[in-house]
Each structure stands twice: as C-alpha cells, then as structure tokens.
Length: 413
Image (cartoon, rainbow, N blue to C red; front, side, top):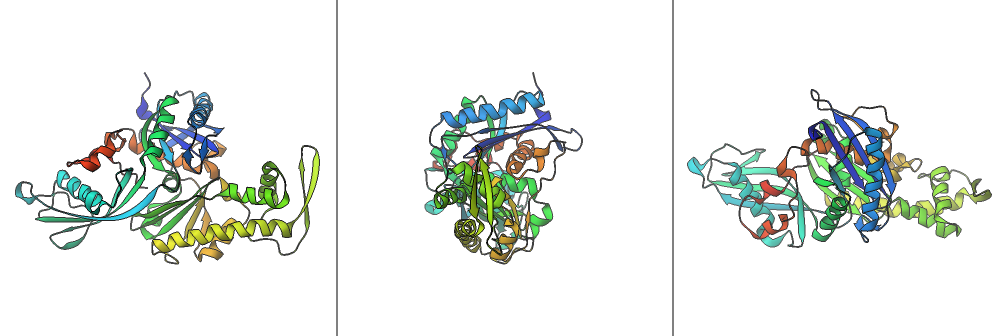
C-alpha cells in the first residue's frame, strides 16, 4: 500500500487540455519536489463546463498515465480544478447568539454564524454548491476587527464573509468525470485560486494583488487583500477567441491562426506595417502585421474592458499596491504584461511558480501553474477530511447544524 501522505497531486481540468502534476513532499520542510507531469488534449467541454462526460474522463486518464509513468507513483486521489463563469463570489453577513456555556465562542458557534450568513436572505440559491466561505471580519458584542473569535466571550457574534459557489450540476459532473477516471477528489479549487496559490507571496496577499489566469476559453480574476480572497470571477472568453478571430479575419484554419498568434501577434501591436510568413504543411502563407493587429487588438480591448469591470465590482480599480500577476496558457501572447499595465493602470508581471522544487521544465511554464497550485493545495487537503466535498453538501443548506465546518474547506492561498 502506498503512503499517500508523501505525495501531492493536482489535476487541472481545462477546456482544451488536462494537466497533472505529482509532487513528492519533503517530510521536514513540507515542500514538494515535482516528480511527474502529464497532459492530454480535452474534448467534451465548453468554457469550463462538461458537455460530454467521456471527453474529460479520457483526458484525465491519459494525463495521469503520463505523470504516473514519469513519477512511478499510482494516483488514486487528487485536488482538482473547477472553472467556468458559473463560479461566483458573494458577500454575505450573519448574526447569532452565543448560547454556549459561559458565553464562550466555540467552533459550533462559529459554524452557526457562517451557516446563518449563507442561508439568510437566500443569497446563495439552493441549486448551488458552496466551494468555500472566507470570513473577512467577525464582530463580538459590537467589537469590530476580530479575525478569529474562537475562545472569546460574548453574547452576540456577527460575521462578514465571502462565499465562493458553483452550480451544482457542474460540480457533480466534474466529480463524476474524476471518479470514472479512478480518482477520488480530495478537494475542488477554482482554477484562478489554484494559480494564485502557486505564484503569490503572503506579502502580496496582505498588501493587495490581482491574479489574472488566461485560459483557452475562460479568463479568471482573483483579487486578494488583507490576507484573504476578496473577490473572484470567471469570464467566458480566452485565448481561443483571439485564435478564432484571426481564423475568421484571414479565412484560414484555426491551427494556422494559432501559429500566427504565438509567433507574430503582439498585444501592443506593431509600430509599422510589415509582411510575415507562416509555413504550414509545406505551404508558406504571408500576412500583414497591420491586419494581425486589427484582429488581435479588438478582442484584447474587449477582454480587458471586462477585466476592468470586474476589478471595479471589487472596488479595487487602481488600488492594488502589488499590481497584477498574469498566468495561464493563453498568457504567452507577446507583450501581454505591458498591455495589461497600460490598460489596467497597475504594475504587472508574469507569474512564476514558488514553493516547489524539481528539475522539470514544466514547473515554470504558464500553462502548468494551475496544476502546480492544485498540487500545493493537495498538501493542505490530503489529511483534512473537513476539506473534502461531500455529495450531500447541498442538503446542508436546508438543515441546521455545523455544515460549514463539516463540508467546506478553506482553500486560502
């Protein structure tokens, strides 16, 4: 029997590609050394959502097979990503009386106030699964600014929190895909949150920072400040949209458009028009950079306008001292950080994986950052039964009791 405590596994279930990372965890430092990676083309998904179960099942199985062969470790459980614009961030508040012996705030009292915040006013619809609840602030008998009230004494406890939730069918289908690939899900983490886990420092999270995760068909935004995830959202648009725009503009196959995007497109555009060539299947095609700029620029303007709107919703436009960190497979567009800095009016840099070791080149590839973050999250989740999602978690929304502590994990970066 394998000692699962020595390994951590992350599986990033992307719309176009599934990527897996396996780490061997140092028993003294807790730092994982990446010993296996794998990837496989995915089908049967649209903008982060499963539309045909067999596609992601096969992709997960294929990606795991490559990672297992490289590492020599057989995976039977992992932390898995979830993505799509159905994932939302909701601010909630709740209040309960402290009715425990001696008016001491116990774990049950905290669980009750978190439950009350979720259920009061029906802010979280019954058809949604809660991925995480992140307390911003507790107030005990009018005293504000309490980070952890456990053990304190009082008569009334209030909470202000951020709840991350997803549509239940999407969560259920993701778990079923993993199970059919013979993988037990330790925890489910939004892709952009996993990416943040891999690239952010505690100082950045405390001071204020945004992570923008550019995927093939989605763009995730996560905003951190004062040590917590303040806001997150997922836009149903990504790098594939730029590729498709180029394909339509030039009337060419998407495969050729992808080559143009990676080799010749620039987020900032060219200063003068020139001709570039692309060789595909022994055929050389020529394109003008002015036309490339027109196709790419229009889509980028739309994407970043939507990103700015999300930052506005969080009340953080121009107010993030640590700026923006960019990750994701679609972030390889030339000059994208400079474009983001100009458009968002914030310092911008490309994300690099921290907190892991190993010699594999995939560790710092933008497209593998989410898988690395999931692997890091798996270290926290492996021995925490409270983090593992129960198939009956949604039932708790209709019941009293400590459902938050029982069914919801804290995937803090």
